Image (cartoon, rainbow, N blue to C red; front, side, top):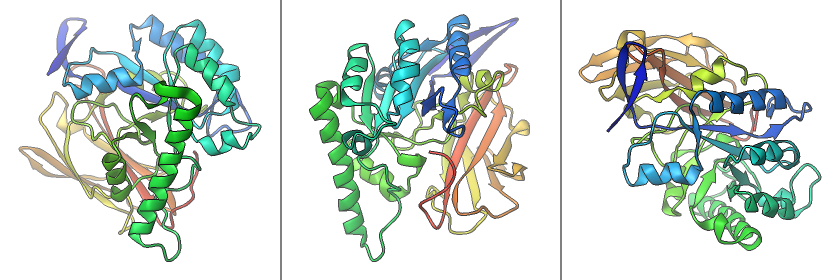
Length: 348
């Protein structure tokens, strides 16, 4: 299923897709790794308005994917993790003035404890009346993939399930039906493994990580990508490139398990056919830049990518891109890694 995009002297077909952006703090210079400056944020919103982008509610995008209906080109969504106070103080007035929808993933524990850097339920109710949506980010914002010492898999599953259910109950109690219309979840720190993704699927959630890339009909509903935005990665034209990105048509990626055994990990990806340029496929590793890519087959295109240096403990990613044939846009796929011991790493 294809949407038609007009370019000068060209008619290019691009796949049905949407781009989801993820923020944490706004105008809070104390935390540059999770903050976007307000001049940057306003410039991004101005860009959407000036270049024909539509900002849709996250639930509407997911509904289109669910019923297999084509998404128009240039659809984006705004998501925000953790419910920091700067969302209410700085971002909300700007979004409200522009009548733009957005989704906040809330960890209820800090809110219930009244921590000073977080919004209150009353502030969230005010935002909800103006069209904001609130969703599950776990009650305690813990490293959910980490198993406690001596913890069985069954006990781990019960503990994590209870934490997620507690957060959903608090959202429902404070914000009502709107918080529970679509069961959305954002992994704390963007961390998940196959067992956690499977648990979220069993619980009926659509789940988002913090790996970059666009989403499309073939995207795994428990591993949906979002572009993390902070003040170091918020300037144009990089933001423009992300907004215009397309989902690389991944048929299979091995290993699917993000928790790394061999370090550095070797990723093998098989692609569906698409209007990308195979010869210009490139992959990049966190902190290492471009890494070697080995073509393993061409019908279909199958390739391997592996960093040349082992990662330190924490979180890492491989990002693989290929240009749209003749179009000045990029197909994008990001594969997250968790390097033991799990429970730390930069960012939020």
